[in-house]
Length: 404
Image 1 (cartoon, helix red, strand yellow):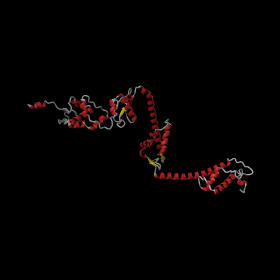
Image 2 (cartoon, one colour):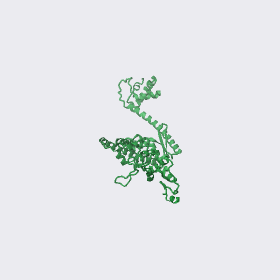
Image 3 (cartoon, one colour):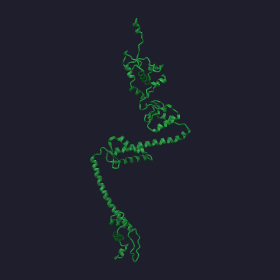
Image 4 (cartoon, helix red, strand yellow):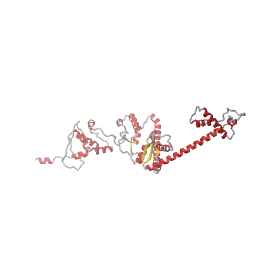
């Protein structure tokens, strides 16, 4: 009599069946933690049978449901749930008592926000009058974070203010450009007056960024076509100056400090280990390609030493020539009257010639009090120089009165 009754009992099915296990070995949640884990997965996956089972439960209650162990393992797999959250699937369980749901909702341990728009909470959105999706933009500027904060405070938007409890740049918040503009738009008269200034600032910022990108591309081209084919050691300031001139040619009057500061980082990002950076004796950076061998460096050093010696010799001869011409000009430009009888106290020796002779005789660059002998010899030699350079036109007292 008992067998027919057993056959008529309804078959108990797996409520979350998602595996190839078709056996009758079903289990139920053993405790509240086990049920909360399953409910959390159902909320993420929007699994209606489990959510329906959660309706009407008392606080701390566990529904009478069954499932396969393998199905539960796949259903609650953390990697799959994180993947769903990353795609922007919203967790909705409006039919569950909010007070009970709050107790079951596990706190988020993710360091970043899901890749969905902060404002419309969608991962994809079509532009108006277009068939293309509007891309998500990651918040990477602090001014964007501050602008969103001001708008949320002005509008008393509790949801956005809650998201702003974390820095949007650090949490990698995303938004659609159209949603951002709509949310941060201020319709007040004061905002209307300042709107033009903000738009101009944004326009100038975009123009600066575009000029910087183009100038960097030009600098990279120079490195590829000039520095790599002809390896040499260059001061880093040469590349920075080249970048600055390139940006100025594009209408940028003054470079931002951050642009000059990050030139090395951007070059390293572009060329990796193909370039080497070393400081000189004063701490200034030098840059050269890794393809530059020690033999090339030895040849360059020898050539530069030779050129330096030749330059020093040429400079020495040039200085002597310039000194002679300077003294000659000082003597010839004098307008000296020749009284008769000659005045023995008349001084026809230019001050430059006297100073030159004092330095030559004493060996002191600044001879303030030359000795009597040095003064006498300087007067005698100076008189001879004046007489010889002017071809006897100017006759010092020494040459008018041989006995002096």
